[in-house]
Image (cartoon, rainbow, N blue to C red; front, side, top):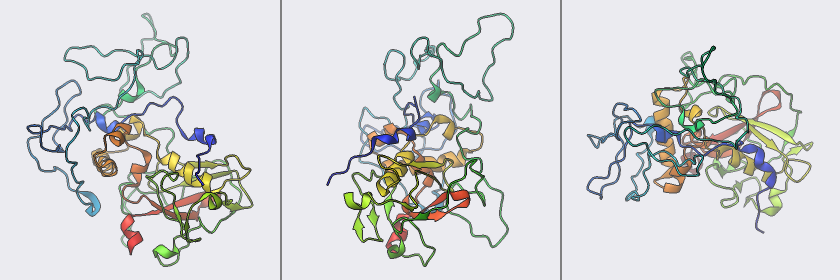
Length: 372
């Protein structure tokens, strides 16, 4: 029986957010087809400003090492002529015209994100933002035009720590004593998450989602789900039942007693994942797997990529994972970097562990660990 996603998941998307590819703001990358037949080459040469022509790579060698033993991304046979994988993602201005790079000497146009008379939401100014004069002159109101938010931050204008990041999320934790197990990946977690501010009741999780700390083996994983794929098209495998998730198993309630709200965290994700009940009075397996996917499928903002807590190496590695996920697909590239890219190569979900204050920790592994 075909499954249709529930319409109550609209809270997982940012209101008024415009899909934006922060990677495409990196002007020190360029894609230059050689004689119209060679695949594009990545180059890690020095940064150039946005108003200069794209920099042509001088060498075909990758200028940075591949992290954690990852294999190089196989280049696609060719990029379509109309698609530049490192051009800015399309964004509509006030005239509903797609974004186009500025011609030399052209002045950037101010665009309206909201209808005339509507107030723009309050925004935390960046470190380098200019302040209006306190006396005299024309003072720009928050209720008039606004510059496209997706184009404000870049390597030369970094944002502060985003407000919606977890308070306990640390991009670069202090070094641990010798003997501690090091976590693979670019993002690491603090020993204990911060108090969420609300208390979640104690619940017993259903067997098909509860991860056990037994010997790691694919048969012991209660569930196997590729977090990059839509579960409506690629249903997860419920190892506990030995079947792929269908309509019957998708209606299984996730906990005893039933609950209407769960909070999920992952040590590599700067955000919490909020799970809420759909059409029923309790969260079901269907609600859980689809809301996990919807949250991780959210396109990040420029401030999530260009901020003063992430350095160039962090952005480089995140760019690599983004390229590995897209595999040269123009449609995927246009959608930009997503939250799932923060998981790196550990994008296979295998269950939940109980966390502090009633929260739940999401456990993921790399695909090759499922084959062992």
